[in-house]
Amino acid sequence: MLPADTELAQAIRVLARAQQDAVWARQQIGNRIRDLLHDFYPAAIVAFAELPSGGLAPARLRRLLITAGRRRELDRDVDRLRAVFADTYLHQPPMVENAMGIQLSALPRQFDAACAAVDKLAQAAIAHFEQHPDAGVITSFPGLGNLAGARVLAEIGDDRSRFADARGLKAFAGSAPITRASGKKTIVLHRHIKNRRLAAVGPIWALGSLRASPGARRHYDSRRAAGDWNHQAQRHLSNKFLGQLHHCLQTGQLHDEHQAFPPPPPLAA
Image (tube, one colour):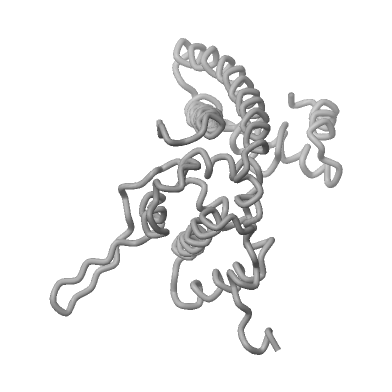
């Protein structure tokens, strides 16, 4: 806890972290369901690899596909699902298979509960975040909505003295690389000691900005053209945003696209 933060910022921290924990819990349960299906009922994974949802009876399969939102090529999907389910797969011993079935029937209920917790906590975090005076500055950045903005505020707080400069914030987020020089050799390393919650916002922020900001898209494309991998270019972009965010929070200014990413001379002309 940061004692210098306001009470509202501390409440946002509690809710945003709880929501992020619920998201991670939901992902873990989903992974457990998939792993269990690999051992217990691999046909389900094959059947629904290309479908959002899923009987062998053609009429029932068709109704389920329509309920799931499918409208096109229903006959093709029905035939494919019937072929998958009718195929032969390896089985576990009967008692083990029965135990796996019991476990599998319980996991979707846990998954539904996790989904409900994610939504409820997101609503609460957003409601508190919208009341904070820094919300306008944070959400003025392309790619930062209310929920991602709440996560950012939850980790950096609203104590202006916490980070003396932008470099401190970047290091805290793990987006700033570590440069080590020895003689004529210079090595640039990825920073592993970081706030993992704030670091998790980085890719979300960067990807969202590519659709909302032409300048962010130019910056990302230039990094890719220079040889960066996708994740490296995203991290470099989020690192740039963090420096701009530190400045805007210190000065109370909103993000300005043209100042943040000045267009190249031909575009400016």
